Length: 93
Image (cartoon, rainbow, N blue to C red; front, side, top):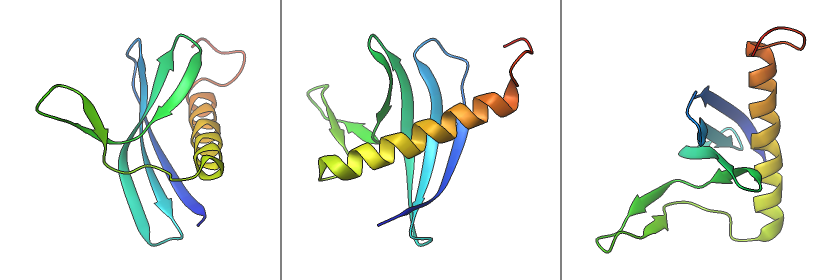
């Protein structure tokens, strides 16, 4: 399964950096991924819902580590490219 499109919606919040929509194989879309700034850097949070007990459950997520790594690398590269387009090097952030 290949990631064929990534749409980044940048946010200016302290922790929430962007919302992400990913298309797989030009035929399956997953909305609601988030790029979060954590204590150890940026990470990609899968779309989730809140359970009645207040915990979260992923709605969609990779089953294998290799797919998670490929997805995270692709999404974070698209995020950095979107930020670079917004604030090219040498210009104010």
